[in-house]
Image (cartoon, rainbow, N blue to C red; front, side):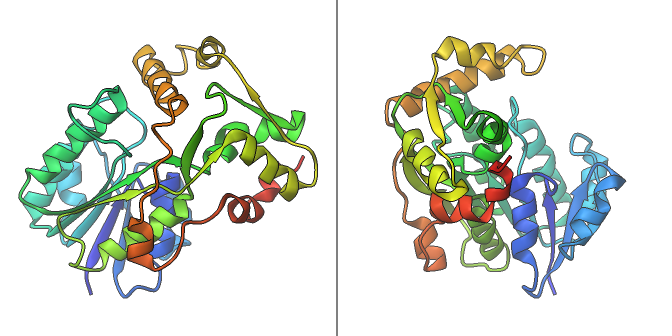
Length: 287
């Protein structure tokens, strides 16, 4: 039975990967920074391992005896530093496969900073000589829970600086399914999968939410400067705020609305719809 370790296992993406690795005839481990997360990962059948992602010796120990690794890093500057440490640990321990979650549009020579950060990380993996699978998700439907559920519950609306543009939105659970399939097979070596989800405008999302939660929900467009002011520098570095504003610009131009059939080719299914997603999580939006 192969051993797989999930690094970044307590975030939304990592949790979805653990959920989808259950009952797949593999031994699953979860790399953790805190013992307080042991119970969470054990509920998905994973065995916890303490690891410091920024320490080479710690990663070397955590990956000992593993055959495959899933890596996702939080939204951060220069994720290639962590990526390189994981590559080193893979080589030290003879792992045969890395599955890496990056981002749609990843390109080390890309026009926006987030694309360059993700692209640099991908380049390291592709040049490592280790079998890899790259997953490139778009914006997540879960962002409505993380960032907008409070105002939807309290004020029956949500705010964003992207006017009426349509953009692709993915259910993280769809990515978790693809990641799990890639981690239990050699058939995905050397592949890069674009995971788009389906495209909606925020006005269309508001209509879906209205139907699901049973009250009128409105989308209120705001100016870029208003969005910037909502991300104070003491909470996010200025470089990260700038990167977020670049992404908003890309969305407003309609450049983030493309559709990829990769999910359908791999799973035989269509992406989760917004209606199905919000129905599954409607309690998060009901005050």
